[in-house]
Length: 480
Image 1: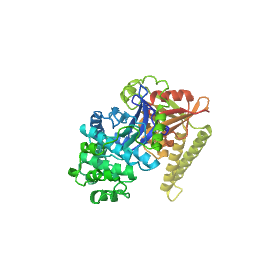
Image 2 (image 1 turned 90 degrees about the vertical axis):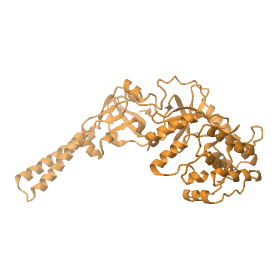
Image 3 (image 1 turned 30 degrees about the vertical axis):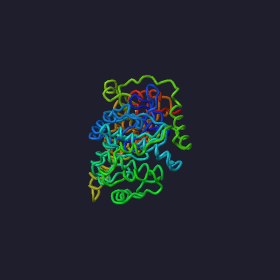
Image 4 (image 1 turned 60 degrees about the vertical axis):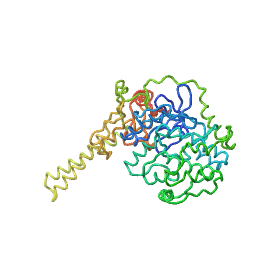
């Protein structure tokens, strides 16, 4: 687990977050904590997907179905809010590495462990299919290895992602090495597609590779559709069921119910090598490290992806304004240069109107340019207003200031969803510096504040930002 970054939210819905678990096609995954201090995995949708109304509708339908999935070998969906900004879902946290992480770290699993893996995955897929869902992206990264058996995760979201991906780019969603032939062709994918992917995952577990090798996605997809699988390294007793699962025709593949008999797992839970057992123990310790801490105070919001939803903040919030100042030396310099430029412009017009030059229009044009530049410099030196509202932060920039910034109106304001964090640094009594960090680039948005001082104490400015900003924006105050 990685620590939270400045751009990461500290709370999603009613769940405080404690670290990063990873990411994928849907978005970022965090370790969260329920009100009862149980660890959960919280998946937050990427902004570009959250802006797609069609994705939200599909996501809501798939989550509704995924909530019904039970069984011992799936990570159950415990909560979700497809209407939040951004949408999110929470599932039971499984203390263990993914199959991909385990094989990359310690090599292929022994044959006995692959038997347990096959039985567990078949039972997990049976529970998913019984609720009318198809996983569509079963791969080593979506299989968690736990002490008491494997768990299938991320079921119920690939369909929503696939429709969005195809709408935008006509791309095929999934991990090429573990796709079924029908998915590689862009055809409809049913439960038989998950059976094909299951066989590919089993070969990866025992041989450390997919049945169709490696290479560019296009080459992999071609081999999946047309070539025979390479089953070298597969234990003899698994050749027949895996070969049947990898049939090109979906109708020729066995159902998951048949696989449960073919992959009959031995009794007991000690099914993993000691190295992987150690990986599981380490993750259990991470999940338990703060379980004994006192629970956080009850949240003062309804369920949603921020501390309060938009409607509540609009009712409650009132905007606050602060004066933005340049350093005295900069103010004097800009005003002096501006006045000189204005004087040069007036002088140019005087020469043009006096008719003492062969090209008065050129002199008048130059005079106009100098006068405008001087006006912009003087305007830039004057105090500006920083406004903090429930919608975001904005600088009251005039037209000349926007011209100097060489940007549109949108550069003088930033909505909260685009803000990752804000740093407040006290400078002198009554003055502070503020750095607004972009949520995507984690870099200061210099065009917004233009190196100005905020005429406010850092404590007052930080308190206002915390009151009006959502919980997804981290507010930090540096020491002088």
